[in-house]
Length: 499
Image 1 (cartoon, one colour):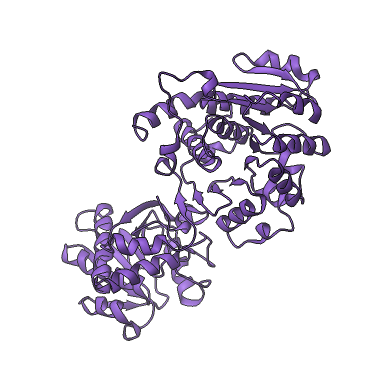
Image 2 (cartoon, one colour):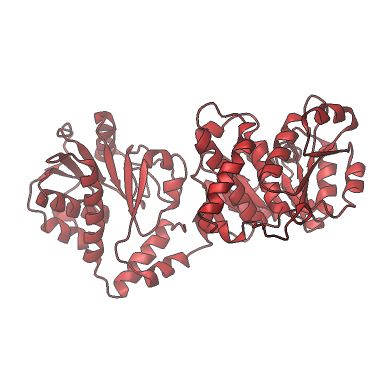
């Protein structure tokens, strides 16, 4: 589940070679893994075009081409650059290829069943242009399935960004560990199916790579299953926490109820909606197992929080923006409880991220912020977080600035803690992009924190559970469906990863 940056992966390769594993052996293993995935996609006696670049990625392609030809498949090999210019292990791999080598000359791609893209790997450091760009555009225009080696050519392995133009693959084979660019958009959408191959670098070399920089994970149960709340014969509602969700005024109460339902369904023992008096009847019409208390001001909230059993507060969904919301956030933060801030609670601090950070520090609040891209931009305007180079860097910078766990939502949601830990989530569905979905996510995180989970682990867990619900439902999903899918999501989780 750990991800390696391009620099960390280079350290792994170097450590393996220093430890006595020949570089050519690693290349042979990588090429064999590519050839195996190609055979799974090719018809018997099918034909592939292997596109090789001038570096080690191209060397992997030469190995795959040789192995496929030896297995009886038709192979055309196209080299970007001159064969005589190849160096090191790539040159040795090319020497072992006895078939013809076609040069890139602008001619159409030969007819084939599969293209193997071994042009440029994850370490591409500039935008593609010239012959390389033209070749990538020709591959995309051909409409032939592409198996990419390491990453699709044109994708930045660290950020998932497109360097000018990029190949669209149906599958990507990478080695040792996934890289951030495999999971961050738009790279994730261009990689297709992800396959991971062990090429024999060994655990000692991997440990060298894992020591580079703060931990970055692919979000999933391996990351947080050990901290997931488990019930025993001694469990009861008072041992499972009590989440307080702040409601907006009349006609704007639905978001808080969605969040409250999420908190209850994920296992919080008790959930209360704190509602303005004028909205009590509206909320009461829709609430049964969820309790209801009047609360219209920061002073009212302060009074409510004298009950220390209320161990998590969720503020933001439908709450309204401006000074009254800032005051309620300040009160909740000063109380030192678990705190989840979303939507209006974040927008109310637009351009005032440092003020929010001061409030959170005031009571040593265990806080999670859950902005989407627009809310993030407003909150962190003028800070280093807003100008960071990629999504992981932005989220980490925001977490460091605020002292809170930050969940930067999207198709590639990133969760980051102030200590630098981060996770990228690729377990989800575009059908989650619907009104109220984020409110439910806030409730899931609050419900998990109410049960005692650490904010980072609760946030990562909530994001994964939310994504799993979206994958289960598919088309037609609305926010109200997500809490009702939790029993099935949790049952499968308990019966598999939590055993």
